[in-house]
Amino acid sequence: MTLQTVKNPPVLRETRTGSVLAIEVSGDWTIEQADIAETQVRDLSTDGVSAVTVDLGGLIRLDTAGAWLLHRMRAEFEIHGARAAFEGVPTRYGMLFEEIERHSPPPWSPPRPGNPILLAFERVGRTMMHVYEDIICVLHILGAFGIGLTTCLIRLSRMRGNAILNQFDQICIGAVPIVALMSFLIGAIIAQQGAFYLGRFGADIYAVDLVGILMVREIGVLLTAIMVAGRSGSAFTAELGSMKMREEIDALSVIGLDRTEVLVLPRVIALVIAMPILTFVAIFSGLTGAGLLLWMYNGISPPAYLDLLHATLMWDPNSITIGFAKAPFMALIIALIGCVEGLKVEGSAESLGQHTTMSVVKSIFMVIVVDGMFALFFAALGW
Figure 1 (tube, rainbow, N blue to C red):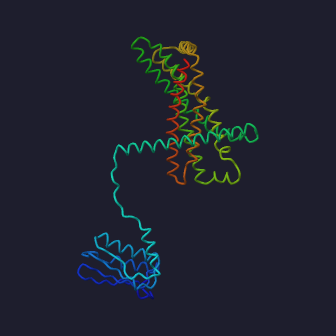
Figure 2: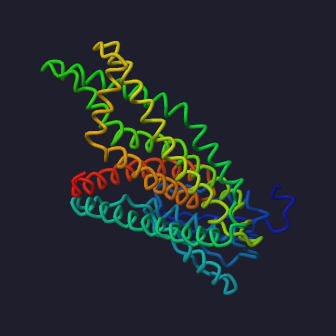
């Protein structure tokens, strides 16, 4: 589009008197002629200008695009230190310029550095608010899970057995190899370190007691919970988050299905059932790894190892009960956190990644906290 092909082209006429610049605006300043108008605005020089008057009396047509260009022109002069003002604004365009002024972004200014002590308190406060919101979300979904489970127990036809079995297959059977391998290695490492340091006092035989109590009472269930949090907890968040992004969860509500009953209930039930089984696999693998290591490293034969292990567990029979009693609670925590974080995903891949990461971090943190609470509780009971 050129000046010759436009009926009323936008025109800027400038008259300079010393450091004072007078600009006359005429023609059509609309989106159709925006390229011509912008070229003329860009060609204006701000050098040596202390004051600018812009006469808008010659405007024939004006729309928002043209008003923004004129507003930007005036702002450019003001940025370079010149006083700029509009004159002769047609009455019919006065409201348009007022709206442009009202919606003009404020000038950028660098943030003022705050008091570091107050900023630290602010971060702590914000963190506590996030923790409070997370607790409310977990309690909310825990209540919804309880209602859904009660409903399904009253009406067994609503219990989704196929979904529970499918989740159990993915959570339990699929996790057995990695849980067994990691527990085998951890058991062997604990046995080697225990035998090495206890051997300095001629008490390397007590490495069996150390491994037996640790694996059965603490390490077996804790290691399993951490691996399940990283494997299944993150999978719950990723699956529900992907469904949230594709609006599949909204579709369930539209067709009258309860999202807790369809999505959360099968995952929680499957993980609560699978966790004790995986804990047993972890304990068995850890004790097996410790036995093989002590056989090769200290010469403790398998029959002697089994006799010592049996005596240890009979001396503290509560260890087995304590180890397996923790498993369902840790499974419940991991499943609820994974589902909550999945349902909090927004519509972007970045949000999905953030909540998946937060799911693993929060699950592992809560598992360790709950394990410590159980330790204090059983210590108070004398177990």
